[in-house]
Amino acid sequence: MPTQWTPERRAQQAEHARKVKPWLHSTGPRTPEGKAICARNPYKGGHWRTFRDMHKLLNAELRAARDLLQYVKE
Image 1 (cartoon, rainbow, N blue to C red):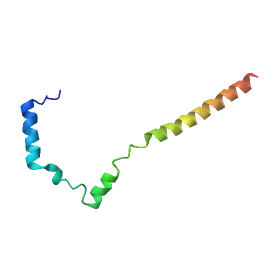
Image 2 (cartoon, rainbow, N blue to C red):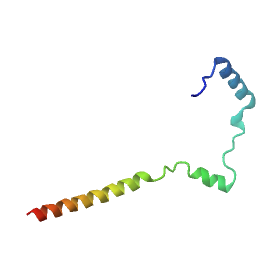
Image 3 (tube, helix red, strand yellow):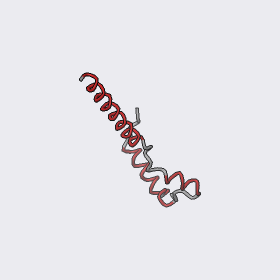
């Protein structure tokens, strides 16, 4: 369970942030390796496309099986 920030703690943290100014020190990736890692941030894994393709293949197989059963029944 996360702890709740008290108004005093929030004010203390805000004062510390104003004093230290961390936004002035953030530089982002500096090395080629770090830049390569950051370039992959928007990648979501590609699972949806794989799932969609498998779904299409399964539907095609089911359609073929249904057609075959219909042919055998006739």
